[in-house]
Length: 404
Image (cartoon, rainbow, N blue to C red; front, side):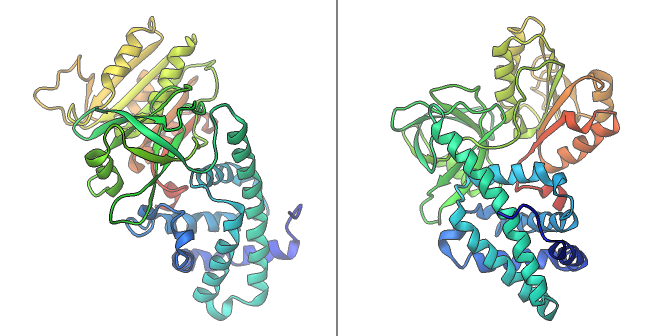
């Protein structure tokens, strides 16, 4: 791997920024078209982010543009590199797959830019691609090795059996998964997710990520899944997957995770099914019996969609006042009881957080839909929370928040 990019490459890549601003999405769409002509490569990716939503080409276009703009200051992309590496590990992407991506990317640049994609431009982008690819391959290799040598760890796809399922609400179901080989599991970091290879009859294999909603342990994982209105995978899990079913699962991945034993206040802030990784954090914090206060703040539509509420309240009740739970129902039903099922009507707001959470002291962990994170990830900074104390997970492809 080169120690650094050549000055000529840096200059040429930065010179392509205007072209990427104008044509970046066309390039990434064409890249995926070329790459997915290879079925083995196509099956590595989550197709819902391509054909169904088209979000991944947008996210990649943003990432490529960010890389070009910061090619002379790559330190600002460290967090993005870690996020991408974790996603790749979940998908079991290996070093041997990178040449296919290189060929597709450079070919797409040539297809879209035509004569403007001179041999010098293509050579510079080739060097820039392999510089970044080598960084990712190196980090991904480290993660795979950590998984392989850790107790209960594995690489590749491992068969898990559904031990039990629980209907958490009208649209949310939890599944308890145990290794089919009877062995232990890798203790995940609270906040991480599992990647699934789903073989649904009549469809090509699907890849999906689902956050782990249980505390770290040695015997099983729990995922808590919302039925999405047009979700092929989530509907199949809800309708067809019963105890005894087997699923192929990759080892836990993801950079969004609780950072050790809390030493200062923690606010776990979620919208919708975004509470699932935060529930793993809450259970771990409760087990630690850390002295730092914790607030678990969750917003959902009503009691019909509210999942894991009794579990959160039980953890708070057993915490001797260390854990406080506040639930917002946007549209409470007549049968939803304020003070018992929920605490506040309406949506969580920045004004409420300013008045009821220690913005000057706390670490904030956020998870929820795109609009939820748009409001709070930036809004908390506006309240004076340092960016380094705002941690978030987004249910979608890497950098989609920036792509929209």
